[in-house]
Amino acid sequence: MSRAKLFAMFACASFVACEKDPASNVKIISRPVAAGTALDTPKFAPPPPFHADLSFSGPCSFRHTADVKCHAAVDDFYTMLVRHGPGNATTSVYLNVETFGGPGTYGGGQMFLTVQNGDAYYYWSNDSVRTHVGPGMKYVDVEKAPLPAEPPNTGVDTVSGRFWCDPHATFDTTKIVR
Image (cartoon, rainbow, N blue to C red; front, top):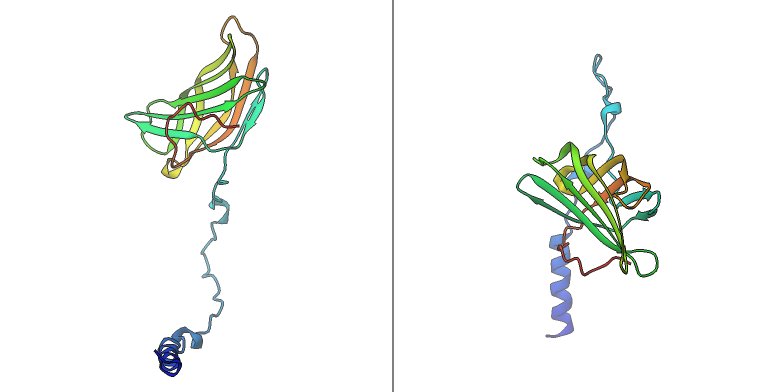
């Protein structure tokens, strides 16, 4: 194809595609709010942050900011994470939101925090963790809750924050977050 024909085709296509924007003559003016109409800005809820921020404090203190595995099944909503702990330890957190029926606030969540380091095994749990599952099951907020140690361990770990669900996660526990 010759350059002249290519230029002519480009010029025609540009001429047809570059029409005047019909909205260019529209003027936007501010309008007063009608009398008696109240603005409801205090009820506006900003969107949640789009990342995890889960804090544990006590004998097993750490902060988790990576996405977690989430799965809804029948009347339960599960979240799980497995991560590298101190030294060669493996830390895992498991949350089961009982009587799950979709996004909303729930009491009675079961949370377990475990640390395994060689033959040593440490375990904290609570069967009444209060949670809020967000729209689209994209995140779970955990209200501040104590996780007492299971015997023979001692101490209390405290958890609070947000699990952010990884939309592509599988429940493969061999993948450890580092």
